[in-house]
Picture 1 (cartoon, rainbow, N blue to C red):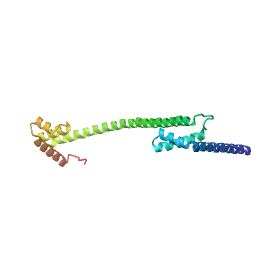
Picture 2 (cartoon, rainbow, N blue to C red):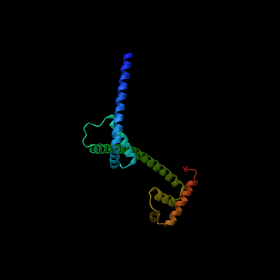
Picture 3 (cartoon, helix red, strand yellow):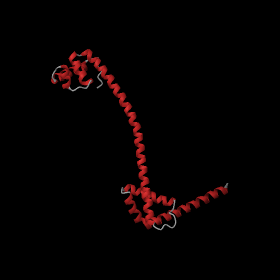
Picture 4 (tube, one colour):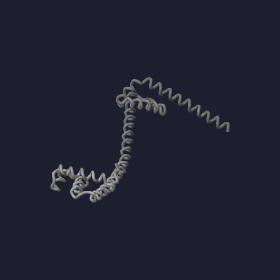
Length: 190
């Protein structure tokens, strides 16, 4: 048992020293090429927040996987690598936005279903109000309200259908609404 613990400790120490060595190499590389790295990042990621994220992500990637040996054109390598990373981040953001849109699309369908249910409820309520209005109002008041609010005609159209002026229709509508409001049969919902 003690031997296992010693092996585990040795492995952790070896891992730790290897990681420290990688961090030191990445830091040295970044210090040598910082100006070049920053200018390339500014070019491929003009947004300062994205640029800083790209800089840090690139540093971590160099720590995880050191640069290959024998790179002849370091600046070309950096440009190509950083451009690819920037494009990858952009594609990732686009995929994320598209997934949000798909999710929101499902929400829109549910919203449309709620809207239909609300519309049916409003129609049912309008029919109830119309039935109450038919009992409470005179023929012209009832017809003026029905044509104006249930069928959605303009006041001038309602007047033409009933052979009356628009002002007269307005008075019929107002009087009809007042009678309905005062009626105990009408449950005003506010």
